[in-house]
Image (cartoon, rainbow, N blue to C red; front, side, top):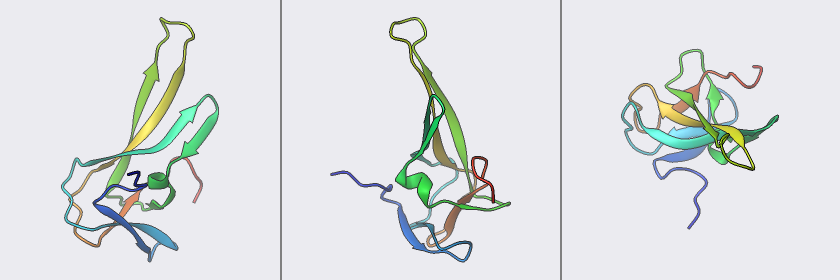
Length: 105
């Protein structure tokens, strides 16, 4: 069954802005929650996971960029995706945040 968010996360009301992502349990540093954004050509697509992350100048997560290509085959393709990874231990009920790089705040 498809679930738009990882099992460890939930949506909740944020003191930063409107709705945010929150931990349902303690989460260790280095946890990879999967894709937040994908870029194909000039189009940037935000996933449900990426849609509810709020900005912080002192974030507990970061986006890790992954490149995909098959330049040696035809038809060739190139695209990038970003995964959400924790850079600090996150406590139960704490909001997950990152420093915005795609959007102006």
